[in-house]
Image (tube, rainbow over all chains, first blue to last red):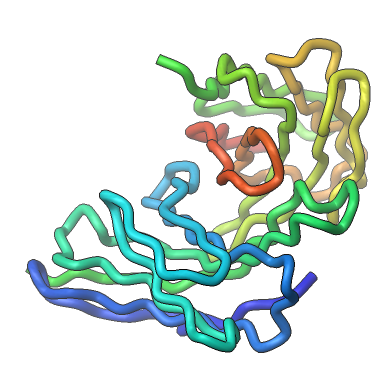
Length: 114
Length: 112
């Protein structure tokens, strides 16, 4: 599975934008980029995914580099409820049965200061 | 509302006993998964199932067993062969190859 690299932790102030980076230099053409977040003692929550183009939804935006070797999850105005571990994951949609699996790393712990 | 239900939320068992964790979904998702999470760590895949009556081992299947007799249900049994069973267990489901997973709220298992 192609791997991702994320900073262990980041800090932000409330109501400011947050840019969470992810490097995936070995990404293949059929890998989708997924982001999840996990609040303490809860299951992960799907945030957003994309393939090549930038994506927006009500939770966040996903900016994908032109060469697809990196991406950035953007929270436009951080709130205290956004404090969580954020996971960047690649999902290969072409590799037979194993394409259903998601492999989670340790993610980035986001702290939001009031 | 559709979702995934894991029960119980907390579970305590004595060492050497088998225990079964429940996972039910009403999302009509084809695929279901079990993950384990230890403190400060990411999620590790135990088993997954793409269709009824079929499942595959994940990265840490030893000491665990599953069944998929119904589309809605994917119970996980933690057997006495699992050396370090105390952990947070998460069940998830998905449909298709592109969409994201939906996770349950987890079961925290403590073996004493």
